[in-house]
Length: 148
Image 1: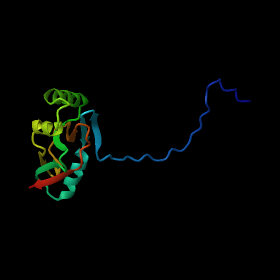
Image 2: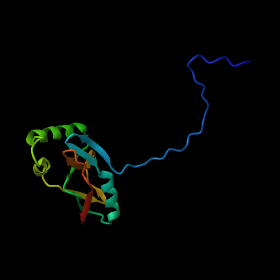
Image 3: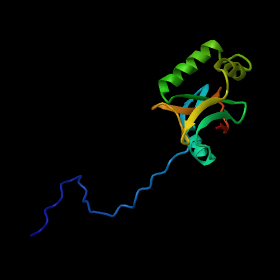
Image 4: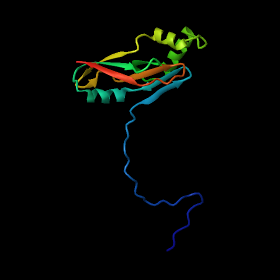
């Protein structure tokens, strides 16, 4: 008995062995890249560094490593970032000289303080640690100081 011909456009399939899939954790990710606002999610990096730190309970101070950024705790939601960019553009127009310095002044302190227990950040379900840069700059790194 002969095999019937395949209908046009159909492919023959054969079972093939698929290699194992490996999960890779991305230490940080770009949460937002708008014309005058860049947001990088550093939550995983901060959590790993805190676990290596040796302190079990206390307060974590997370600061940007350079003048171009600030650290904030917030939900990672694109609508919020767009609203923030619009608000800052209304308060300090893009054409204003030294805009980045003025925006950082309005946004407030550059450092976030987050309590931790059993070497884990005490964040809400959807809260993330975010590193923000303004005027198209990519924020540099960050530093962690713990008290506890």
